[in-house]
Each structure stands twice: as structure tokens, then as C-alpha cells.
Image (cartoon, rainbow, N blue to C red; front, side, top):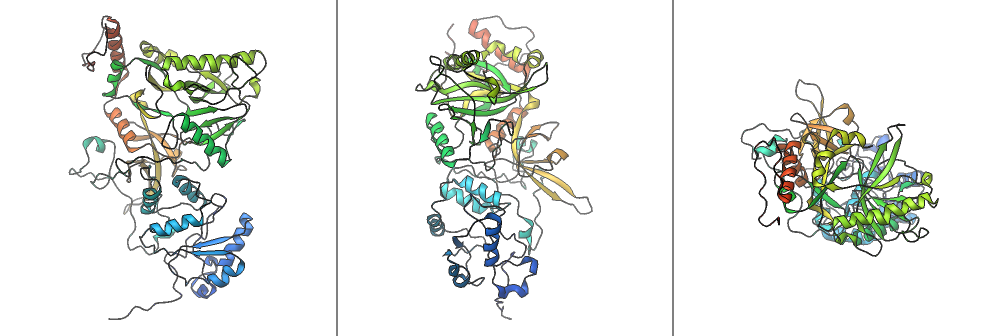
Length: 592
């Protein structure tokens, strides 16, 4: 048997074509780089691929105008370069943390040491650190087990993002080509018929859920590295850049909401389905149109301190917008949190686009926790304390409308029987912005943060949609032409949820969040969701699939609405019903 000989000049595995360093600084503090090699390795390295410690130092100084103060070496050996002569001799601090790699994640002692060394940096959440790393050194962490381990240790219970595809330079030396997962047509699939109808697949095996069960979700912050407002470059609205200010606004809004988790604390409606439509019998509801806009919380905390938070919990500063006190128009409101959606209205006479924020709920008004009141009182508060004082200030010249970045209005809600009017073509024509459904708001419930099972959203079956993360993969079958397939991912599911053909409109959206509807037995691209950095959760996606498979049609919705009102007011049933059974009203739900 021949002995294996060790070559001291052997290059690290997959080193040659690995990018030298991150494209940008990470959080203005870190540069990620592959291990540099001392000059003795040069005979085995083409000139264009060489990378030394001195090249690293010179590059950081030239491109980032920074001087490296510390190098943390995570390799398991010392043979690649001489730390004493190449690093420490130049006044650079040096820390060696030996990590084995090769399928083994760093152990807890190693990561704890790293955290201590860079303690000043660790004001960021796991999400933000992963995003910043990916932004500076694409494609970021592409090993799913590393991402899983980070969340298991530092954010147990958090929604774990799906790792990006393995970069081409890391495929060197693979014995067989990595192939994309393809849908199985086997009749023996262990997935349910419902799941298979919507293209959920993984070699006849149900995919695994990420979230550990029964674990309390700790506070963490969702962070979009480059947040974009609903109207990009809208004068007077800009992403907040002060990290202390971002942290303060987030913590204060979460505190107002009594939100113990992290991320966006606003109430989240659920899709109406054949089961929860029974709530229309159990609770008193108001109904409004669902605007085709962008959701925001607005935090008003004094003149010049107005902020908007999107679904990513990104914070935007709003300038030149005023909310005067009803009793003293010279005084500005403070400590007020409102909920609403941003739309672009179109003036029919001039076709001019008008940015507008529609307020539809209030969580706190100054010192009063309005979220604990019923919905009708909350709507009265919006009109009396927020909208009417602005009208008075506008008419008296205390507010210059031309200087404001957008207008502000209250979004109206109506009695349940107005459903038919709201879904009529006539109403849609009168409205200056798009409609994509209805919202049913329970009157007697307080404002509830996070998922709220009693706030129902109804969409026409053709408009039901899911927000996916798109992963475009190109492959070629034997004897065939190259083809691009879009794999669709959701949170809490470590395999593709489904797939779709990549159209021209989708070619530049790899890794982006896209909204898709189920149309003619396939997923159909609708638009990019620039306001979101993460796709829907698995449970949300499956709920939408259920509403697609067993939809609440407009006709069925109106039958239920008429029956609810008939029972409530003992009215005769409407004509032309089609004999479908009504949901059973709970005993004692009505008092005649």
C-alpha cells in the first residue's frame, strides 16, 4: 500500500477561484477575506489569482480608506502565512480561533470567543449580521447548517432564512454535478393531494419545518440593509441612517404595542376561508376595501420626529409633516402610534399621481392607550384628534400643504351590509387607487399585535397570492436546450415550496421577494415586493393555498353577509340563494 505524501505547498481546497474579499465593508467595521498565502505558494498560483497579507492591507486602504486594526484568523492551521512577520510586525492585533470546517460548524467556545473579540459590533441581530455579510460578500453564508446553527444559538425560534445557492467557485472538485430538485410525478408521494396540487415537492418526502416547537420567540430586529420606501426617492421621506435612532424607534413602538417579540409589531389579518367565515356570525364587524398599497405604522413623537415602519421593521424619517393638537394648533402631538397604508391616488382630471397615507387604526394617542378601546371609538379618535386638527391648521395657514411629502386621510369602514357596494365596479371606478379585496374588522376587539385571527381579508379567488423568495436555477436536460426554472421558497420550509417558469419580467429578480397568484393551475408572477425582505411563512402559504382550493366566491360571501344581517335583524332571506348550507351560528350568539 502506497503512503499519501503531504505537499506543504498544496493550496487550500477551493481557494483558487474564491473571491479575495468582500466587496464592501460590513457595517463599516469588517472586511471578510479568504486566507492569504505567503509568497512561497506562488509557483502553484497564477499571477492573477495571488493574494497575500500585504495585498489585503493595501486594498483595504485604497478602496475603503481604512486601516486594518485586527485580524481574526479562523483557519485550522498556521502554514498559509506568517502572523508574526506579516501581521503583528505592522502593529495589527492578531487573534487565532482554530475552526475545523469540512462540514463542522464552529463550536460554542469558538463563537463565544469571537463574540467577545468583536463585542462592540454585536449590537446587531443574527438577521442583520447575515444580511450585511451577504451584501458585502455575495452570496453570503450559503451553507444551511451554518445558518441553522446561528439561529439555534442566538435566536432560537426565529424564522430561519433559506441559504442561497452554492456559488460556482465552490463546485470545484465535486465528483458529481449538483442538480436542482425536480418535481416527482410518482403516485406513491407521501405529500397530501392538497399539497401536490400546488406543486409542493421534494422527492416524495415532506419537507422539514425549521422552527423548533413550543419555543418562546426572543426579541430580535429584522433589518433590511437597503430599505426602499413605497415611492422610491419621495422628497421628504428617507431611510433612517442613525442606528441609535432606529433602535429607539423600534423599541418604543414595540413597547407601545406590548410586543414581546421583535420585528414589525402591527396587526396582521388572516385570509378568509370556509372555516373562519363563521366569525361573521360570532362578532360584530365593519368592512372596508383592501387598498393595493403598502402597509406602515406611523410613530408621531413631536415636531420633526415622525417615523414610518414597514413590514421589514425598517424605519423611515418623514420630514415636513405635521399633526397639531386639536386644542392648541401650535402644539404638536407626541407619543402617538397609528396604523395605515400608503397608496398612490390618481387625479382623474389631470392624471397626476398623489401620494397619500390612509389611517385605519390607532394604537396609542398621546397618553391614552386607544388600542384597548373598541374599533368604533378608535375610528372616532382618528377623525377628531388627527384628521380634523390638520384640516383646521391647513385652512388657517399653519400647515403648508405644498411642503408636505404626502397627504393624510382617514380610511372609512362601513356596516357589514355595505360589502356589496365595496366590491362593485362602480365603487372601484370612483376610488382613486387600486383595490384587491376587502378587510373585515371586528368592532369589539382591541388592537392585537402580530397575527390576528379575527381580522379577515377577502380577495377574489383570482387575486389570492403568496409572497415567495425566488431562486433562479439554470439546467439543461440531455439533448435539450438550457432552461431557467424559478424555485419558490417560503419561511419555515427548507425546500422549494413550488416552482414556475422564469419570464422576462423575472430575469433580474433572483433572490428577491415576489408576489404570485395561482392562475390556470400554475403560479403566475404579479410583482416584486420591494417592501419585504422575507417571504410568507409556510403556514400562511398553506392557508392561501386552502383559500385557492376552496375559495369564498363573491356570490358565497354575499349569501353569508345577507344571512348574518337577516339573523341579526330577523329580516326575510334574500332571493336567488343556491341552497348551500350556511355556517352554523353558535348558540347564544344573537339576542333577538
